[in-house]
Image (cartoon, rainbow, N blue to C red; front, side, top):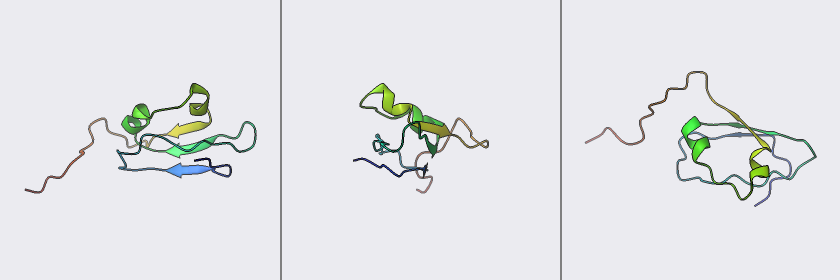
Length: 73
């Protein structure tokens, strides 16, 4: 999948998403990606140059331990 006009992506709590679309817009265009740090670190890239097309933005309220499950019993 390609996304030529993509400017900003906001992803929260989507742990099964492992790849981002190819950002094939204008030259030097960087897509801002507002996401969790753990999720960003687990992303899979087809080639290393694609990762440079995205700029990760992590919340300043980021906490390392994030509950990933249900507390209901």
